[in-house]
Amino acid sequence: MTKTVYVLNGPNLNLLGTREPQVYGSQTLADVEQLCTAACARHGLALVFRQSNHEGALVDWIHEASRLHAAGQLAGVVLNAAAYTHTSVALLDAVKGTGVPVVELHISNVHARESFRHHSYLAGAARAVMCGFGVQGYALAIDGLAQW
Image (cartoon, rainbow, N blue to C red):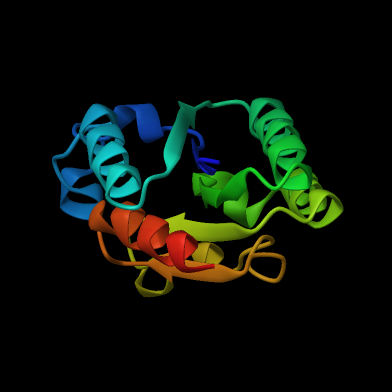
């Protein structure tokens, strides 16, 4: 049975490649999806790759992933909640309430940026947290999920 990895991207990540390239790099979200597809293929995993600027959509997708988790068909979730990392109790409750294994991911090193980015509502519920590896962090997170 092939397990699935969900890669969920939050607000403004649709602007990758043009938004603050000095912080986030020049690769686009389509480039990130190709990177994730290749990483999943190396491990024989299926990929669900999504982005939304809306908090509720991210919550719904975590709930969707939890159904695969309950059936033993989920490798895990890579969650780049972007700004919602620092504000969303709803995402925290979704992760805690469903028990899905989550890697919290950030392209930049959030601890080297503005102080408001240093706090994560999600970190305590995530199995792992990655930041500062650029978009390559997505592939590294998938490599980690494949080992769980």
